[in-house]
Length: 146
Image (cartoon, rainbow, N blue to C red; front, side):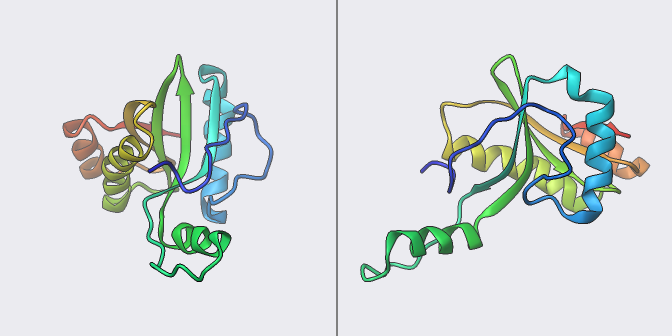
């Protein structure tokens, strides 16, 4: 099954509008964009994967899609370079939950969009504690500390 809504690629530029990023994540994301945007071809926001819809034949398709979106996993950012996609979690401080997102989201995205060439998961943060850095390195999760 594809992503809930089609992936919308756009240039990696500072716009101030990043669907699905939490307010506390925007400062981190914009610092990363200022430092690294030129290294990437495109980004996509608010990518919803998985999710469930009730088995209700009387519900209109738009309502079922809304249910699926509401229950889906929400990927913060996809990065595109040379046709390869890196799935990124953005947080001011990296935590174990960021590790989980960087492991799980690429797997679910690969299931939902098998034609995508998934490079792996990543974490963009302002603070990367030593234990989280160690786990990310052990799991080959790319990290950016800005």
